[in-house]
Image 1 (cartoon, rainbow, N blue to C red):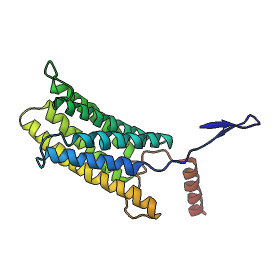
Image 2 (cartoon, rainbow, N blue to C red):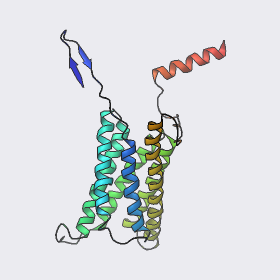
Image 3 (spheres, one colour):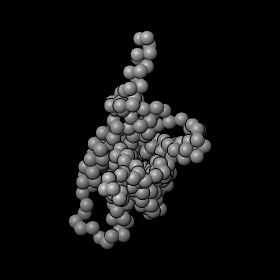
Image 4 (tube, rainbow, N blue to C red):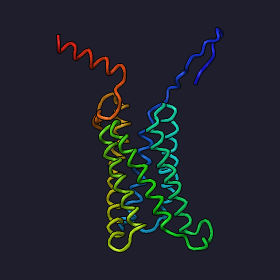
Length: 228
């Protein structure tokens, strides 16, 4: 955002926006908890899972994405928005399955859903690489999301033992995603609220991201001091 002063100079104005990760990870944690309970056989049907997919899986993460983009956080905004739209798609799929959108003719081909899962697997793979430079808790979450989409792809595109293995893989990894997302949400909220580290999330790996100019200068200064 920019403003023009009376003298004609352009000034940049930065809006102060709170860290939205607590909300986004809450949405992810809750919707994956409900969805994994159905996959694991602890609950049945998706009728009562649908509202959580729409409001927590989709809207909460989309709201977090919008604020992350305002903070110029391309990684966070893309991640939250990408998975928000995934849950919108899942929600609509469940609505079709429940007959809420009327009869579907001809019968839908489940393999199309499988290719959508493969697409999200590709998306998650490169987002996992990006997560290496956020924190270790988030990186672990993305690793489990990768396993989840691998399982979902096997379930819908495979057959027999492969499909059953994929289902179990997806179910347990989704439960793991939920646990890590809740932890990440709690860490984002409590660490900010208390002004100290209440829940550790681990430092970035620091191997892929280009160091900032300030970071390079600090490292160079430290090297010179060691030499001196």
